[in-house]
Length: 87
Image 1 (cartoon, rainbow, N blue to C red):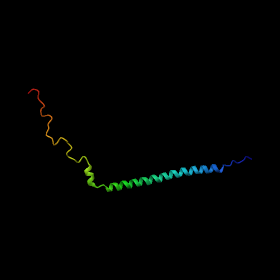
Image 2 (image 1 turned 120 degrees about the vertical axis):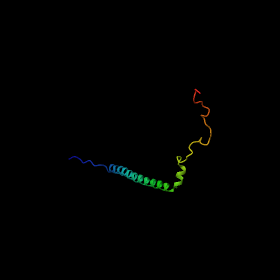
Image 3 (image 1 turned 90 degrees about the horizontal axis):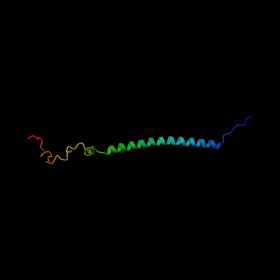
Image 4 (image 1 turned 180 degrees about the horizontal axis):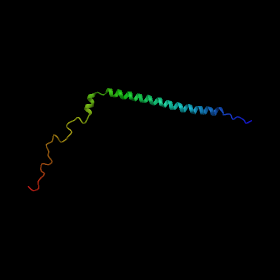
């Protein structure tokens, strides 16, 4: 009769330990990511609620109508240009 090969209990313990650590890391990481995303969404929502609407209008650069820096000067660069060469 052939002898039965018995698996050493230490090998079984190592395999169970590796599988347990792997599954624990995977599921723990998933829960941590979900908690982190929820915390970040809550902090963004609270930060947006704290910003008043009038600050947004002050920061907007496109609302200013004085975009031309030379609008207040009376210098005409084309004043002395000869337009018609036949006159």
